[in-house]
Length: 425
Image 1 (cartoon, one colour):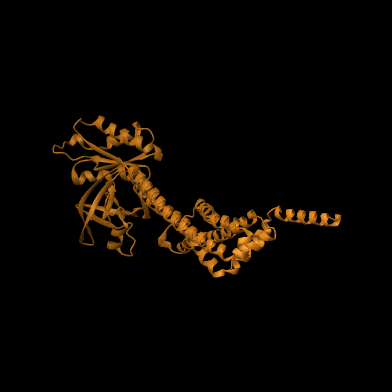
Image 2: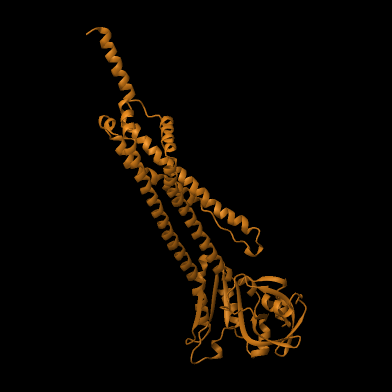
């Protein structure tokens, strides 16, 4: 064989070898994947829509769960921070010595570690006279510190000071509802009201930070007066309910147990006291929030799985439609890895773009709500949080879904034989 013929064959073989073993170029793969997706725009958009919905669901589900959790926690904690409360359990044989006294609160405050505040209350149904008209109200005798423990919000005037309590001053603080109903637009501070046989000067108007709907001693028709005044109505100085505020949330359980022990040690063995805290309710709320979050995330994952199956189905159809194209590319030297990577790139583009669009939609919804709420005064400090962890999770899971479900079609395309592919019509 002529030498020039041998060299030509060697050069052609070398050329083919170079083509076959040419390293995969990401730029070229990216360009071919984009061209393939642009060729079927409607199909690509519909496939991407499933990923958009799934990725948006993940972010919105976590956002809703966080918002719900934050709202529930704020409602519970709004009743009182690190709160321990208790009362005497009614029994068949009640004795005055069993009642909770100011001395018990003093002992609790100074003997129990991590206690920062104590307060006691005694509520009694009474009749109030304003401008000659009688109104049924709940007269609540309170001690100093009650406003801080229950986190009351003073709308007008002031709360009781030490002089009011020590001098048994005839002053009172009204709920917002009573002040509105009885005095309308008029400022009630400084006005006189009569409760029973005593006349009181209104020194303030308040509201609860979180409405308890009458489940505590405070109702919409309550009037607060210094606890020492209650003796003029009942003849006794006993607390129906007492409150203890712990220093930190982690101290609440220890303070609860210690308060129960103090009360038992200061009263007869037969007396029973119900001492509780909000930790159980808070823990229940957290558990429900976590369970709800997991459930909703599972629903979002199901949506992504369905979209992944859609990607796989569309890619399988695409492989069949492009069998002839794949045969031509393999015939001119494209390797199986190049074909596989091209189809994986197409699946990644569909899932990645869908994830970005879904995340953008999901993030814009809370942002729009927060912007709108800032112009609504009655909404207060309501804020819808955005979890950036869920954003990252959504993007990673969505892209992974595209790659996982796109591998089978990509692998099938890579394993097609050139001779068989070229004969396909």
